[in-house]
Amino acid sequence: MSELEFDLFVIGAGSGGVRAARMSANYGAKVGIAEEFRIGGTCVIRGCVPKKLLVYAAQYGAGFEEAKGYGWSADNVRFSWGDMVAAKDAEIARLSGLYKKNLDKAGVQIFEERAELLGNGQVKLMSSGQVIRARKILIATGGTPRKLGLPGEELSISSNEAFDLPVLPEHILIAGGGYIACEFASIFAALGVQTTLVYRRDFVLRGFDMDLRKHVQNELINQGVRVITYANVSQIAKQNDRLIVQLDSGQPLTVDQVMMALGRTVAVEGLGLDRAGIAINDTGAIKVDEFGQTSADGVFAVGDVTDRTNLTPAAIREGAAFADSQFGPRRHSFDHKDVACAVFTQPAAGSVGLSEEDARERFGEIDVYRESFRPMRHTLSGRNERYLMKLVVRSLDQVVVGVHIVSDAAPEIIQIAAIAVKAKLTKQEWDETCAVHPTASEELVLMRQKLTA
Ligand code: NDP
Image (cartoon, rainbow, N blue to C red; front, side, top):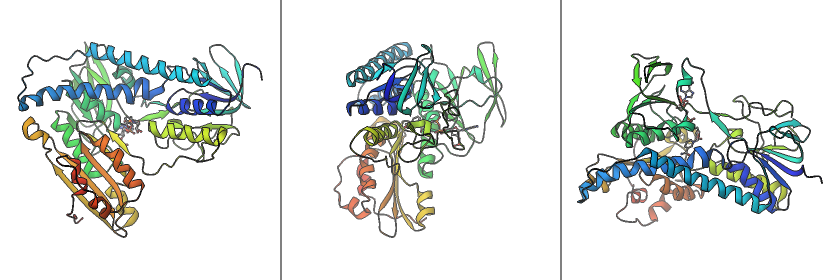
């Protein structure tokens, strides 16, 4: 085999690509990987990881305030955005380095440049011009923020830039009502930025359980976010140092920064899908079967570029299943059902399984258990924040098919609840589990009052 021939060549060193590359190499395959930006991908470089660090930063702000109710005096506390960004950058650099080291350790050859498909098992490295031949190719290029082409859109930022703003704006307008819009609205508001969220429908987080959506939206408002619903940004213009945002629903708003969080599109532009005979679906994502096989022989895809479950742990599982199936001992695929997820607002939301609406549509008869309450922590903190615990149960066999939580610990709780949902435990089995007291999550095993729809 010459230097530039591989058993597997991976395009994109994000969560899915790196996992597939490392595991395949550990199974003995000769593996190369190309990355045009930074090793680690969206999650590590400008997604989950830096976002969670900002969430921690934001929580301290609220914590200082709340501590007063517990006897602390926390006057004159100050936040330095510059210090936070520098600390975050150092951590991201450390993690990216670790990813690289682990790829090296597994014997994966890294090419830090863009790669494009030539077809017939060939890939071209765009800086060096080298052509690579691979028995198998894995596309794991992820996604990029969606652009609408609005007048003045170039004056706005996306989440990519939000992590590295030179200064915190005084007033930010965030367009969208999904994960990114809600999380950043919550972060900016907690950091003291006047925050306006503009969303085209009634309640944020479409696709989630309606009670959870309403609860999160109320808490955003409670946190000080101005939420404007049934509205779209139609134009952005610069006036002196500020931005004038025209909404399709009324008066223009004057702000310092506009962040568009209108979803993400798959990163396939210029990749050579046509040349390689790779079919896409109607959202433009690469069409794959359950094993990640595309329409072209020997070419596979995992992660956001396939637009299935667009979450890091799903991409990692897809990458692992690919490696096991193609180079390892076991052909299997990742089960996309009942994947838990969390939205890191303040308080956060966690969800697994079916929403009440989806369960009702699927099963007809369902039982709903729901509690909304002020957590014990806020009896002294003075904060007027409420939590939500909700179980959706299939009437027929009493299996808990959906769990929806809004609480500071929702992301941690939902991880464990997902095991019970995946194991198809019944409401009675949840109830037989003794409570841990005093906690907020004990509600999950104490709810006895069935709600009538
Ligand atoms: P989402 O798909 O979650 O939300 C996109 C939002 O933009 C929706 O509110 C949508 O409205 C709105 N929108 C889309 N197109 C338009 C349009 N033309 N005009 C006006 N509004 C529009 O995308 P995000 O960008 O927030 O996040 C991308 C993905 O990244 C998520 O789906 C998730 O998979 C992942 N992610 C996960 C996180 C986590 O696990 N905590 C955190 C961040 C991202 P509508 O509801 O009406 O469609």
